[in-house]
Image (cartoon, rainbow, N blue to C red; front, side, top):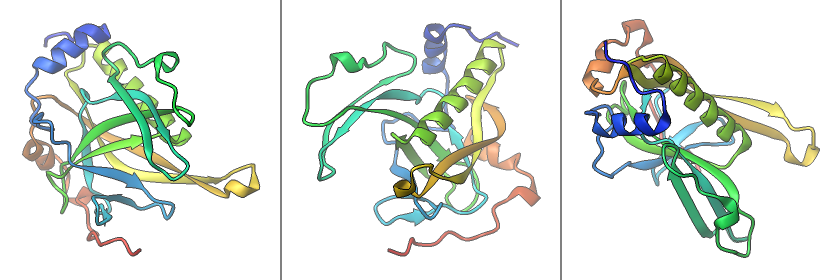
Length: 212
């Protein structure tokens, strides 16, 4: 079994040269994936809810970090992201805008089971819980790469948790959980991953449109 490079620079080279059928690299990453205050995972302009129990493969090449700035009327004033395998975006070098720069993280996912199968989405967030979960998954990926594991594609269940904020006005805070259930190699396709999902693990519920 070939050993994967231990450094992030060599790892990027390896991943860029890999055949990644789990998440095709044609530049179209699909719709945005969001976690609502009702703890529903939705995507697309129509707010389509993901099927409960469906599994999603995270593209290990797509991890990115940077900063975003929003105006008071929720318009994007600036959005600067960079791959975690390249030089980072430095907040001190960002242009001055009429808003604060917030840390932002992102990665791409492809559904590998259920009604959403082959759907591709991008998850981007600035929330404290989202950034923390992003870094947790990234550290697990890094650990496997350093250990020479070939299975570096995390397959996850989209879950969530919540807690009551200590400051009353913030109320209940919803946090994302990307529950890693298995790992696959970069040359595993969506069909290959789905075949390995046990029958009793197949998603049972049906997705539905989010009620406004």
